[in-house]
Length: 528
Image (tube, rainbow, N blue to C red; front, top):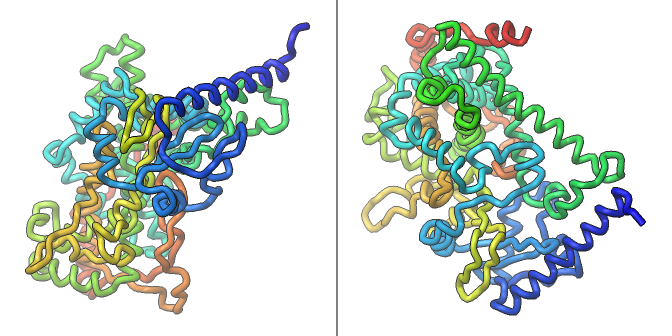
């Protein structure tokens, strides 16, 4: 008798679970997996995954107390390895990078939505290496990023102007400032200066959905891939509609700026950009090259935009809670730079405390607390435990930056922990952890770091940040949201110029960096 579709999928599901259980039994016969909670039949440790909305890094840190620095869970036969020790993370992701540089195939986010086309979610293959080479040429070093110094300075100035005029919209201004810089670098696109920009809004929405989609186990199809064969009309398959909608939005946000650059180049009106250079250097008739170029540009945006927004927001939260840090930073700026101009990237070496604030911002709340998962591409042994080929391997970056053995009093925001003073050795630099490991280090790290320094230095130079004047202290706490990229929980603060002279300095930026006409109208005409 022929099987109908649901019966066939059920049969495949039973075969899938049986095969994974058999594979696990064979693995156990070789070496034990890292310790972890006892699972249930068939589903394994499904109930031991973080609950929706829970801060994942703190959930997995409990494993260190119970099972030691390396632990594991198994869900429907999928091994998930949790690393709560920085040295083990470096051993696997750096020293053994040939085995741990790929990404697991998270079916929902990667294949169904399409994020596997970007560098962040791509497997370690020829396409990944081509995109990484593209990005390295433009933003892969401090010297490469230096070419964008004027652009960063202009947008930092525009950011200060926006905050001066409407400080209550701080997060919107951060998103606009970061998005404007990256869109200009990636596509030569000028964003709307005074209202919502269509591309910044589109990309921001796509990144918010990515943060939800990329959490392992957030969608059942990642745990039970055979469910993808179910027909859409069956109950419990609403995630299929969500995947199609998000995939369409991701494709649009990738195609629209690519088409914009091609249109501007055809008209002879384009500004040199990352993508225009790739197009000029590539084979325009080669579909594979064109596709890699298009997704390389999208990767440039996604690699740095959302994480930088989180870091800048975290800085403003910290300054609101720790006024003594703010005052010490302002004293350094006044002493080194004075109050007649703003600090620039050229002043960086003379501002050690500001540099320490950059490090402490990244340490106090790493923007990707658990990073993105690595995948083991070979069977391996670590600390006497077996790591099967195909395992998801997570490093608890948040714990690495909050380990009291490395960072005493880790919950406090103390930039001086990174300064060499009499009797004090600087604590480990969080840059080694927060941008990823080995061959998967974030390609936008240099751009993000210079943007963060400039925003922090110039904000401190001209603004005082304090708790809300109406006494709503409850609106300003060191609380952070769950997700692959973690942002501060919504908070309120008061932001005012330090003096009338500082306010005048901010307003003078409008003459130094005049607003440019947006390319939004060009996009609108293209869509007609």
